[in-house]
Image (cartoon, rainbow, N blue to C red):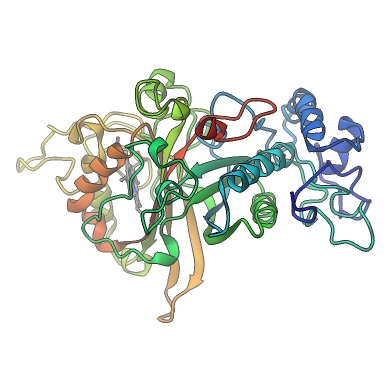
Length: 442
Ligand code: HEM
C-alpha cells in the first residue's frame, strides 16, 4: 500500500480551522461521536458504521444536512436513494501497469474511504490538519466543517475493465464479464466525443452539498494515484428526477418537470423487476447489482427558447406548467395514447418524447432515471454549454437501448446533441468489512 495515497485511520479532529460550524452533524461532531482511534482503517471504518444510527437520529430532525446513507448494504447507495441535489461523476482508466492484486487493492482502499466519506468523516492518518507538519495532509480538507450531506458513492465497472481495446484480459476476469455489459451500439444522431465517453471504472458521487461531492471524488482520485487516472468527470446540479414519491418533481433546463413517470423507490416490485439484476440474469457476482448508463446530452437551449409554448408542449407530450399529459388529467395521470383531438390527430403527438419513451411503446422496458442538469460555461459562439447529464439504472442495458432507439423519432432531437456515453456494471453493495465488487474476484 502506498502510504501517501492510502487512508489508514480516521482523523482525530478537524484542528479547529474548518471554517464556521454548520448546523447538524459536522465532521468535527462526528469525531466526537466516533471516539478517536489510532487503529487501522478497518477499525476506523467499523467505528464509523457504529455511529450511523446516532447520525441518522441527529439528521432526521431536519437540520438540512441531508442525512447519512450507510455505505454497506444489500445494494449500493445512489440508486434508489432519494436523488440528492448535486452530482460529481467520474470515469477512470486503470494504469497499464496495474495487476489483479493492484486492482483489488484499489477497490478495497476506495471502499474503506467511502465508508468514512459517506459518514462525513475525514480520511487518512491525521485527516486534513491533524497529521505531521512535514507531510501533505491525508485528507484534502475542503469538507472540514461540512456535514455528510447525504453523500452516496456508487462504483461501476466498464466493459474495458474486462477486456481492453486490444482484447487483452488484464485482470483475469474476461470470462466473468456479464453478457449484458457491452459497449452501447451507435445510435442515430450520436455525436459522441471520446473525452466524454467510456471508462474502465466509474464513481458517481451524489450529495446535497456540491463541495461534499467534489471532495469525495477528489480524494478518491488521489487515493487512486498511480493505479487509475481520471478519464472524464462531470459536475451536475438540480436533479432532473425524483426517485421517491416524497420528492417534488424537479425541472430540467427546457423548463419541464422531469421525473414524473420515473420508477420510484416505493414501487418495490417494479424496482425489483426493472432495476436490480436477479440471480438468473448473469454471473452470480452481479446479483443485486444494476447497470448504469450515462449520456452527456447537450441541449441547444438558445434555439429551444425561441420555440412557442404550444410547440414545446407538443414535443414533450406534457404541459409545461403542471406536467400533465396532453391527453388530459393532472401530473400523475397516465397518458392516453388512443385519445384524439377534433381533427382525429392523437392528443399525445406521435413524435412526442413521452409517447416514444413510454413502456407501452418499448415492449415494457423501464429504467430508473437519475440525471442532473449541467452548465459547463459557454461555447465559442457565446451559447451556454448546457444540458442534461442523463443517468439511468436498469436491470439490463437492453432496456435503455430499446428506448434510445425508439427516441430516434423524437421531435426533441432537433434541440439535443448526445456528446458522451458510457455503460457500467454496478455490483451489489459491499458487506461490512468487505469491499465493493469483491464477488468479481472471489
Ligand atoms: C436532454 C434530453 C432529455 C430531456 C430534456 C428529457 C425530458 C423528459 C421529460 C420532460 C419527461 C416527462 C416527465 C417524466 O415522466 O419524467 C421525460 C420522460 C421520460 N424520458 Fe426523457 N428526456 C431526455 C432524454 C431521455 C433519454 C436519453 C431517455 C432514455 C433513453 C429518456 C427516457 C424517458 C422516459 C423513460 C420517460 C418516461 C416516459 C413515461 O413513462 O411516461 N429521456 N423525459
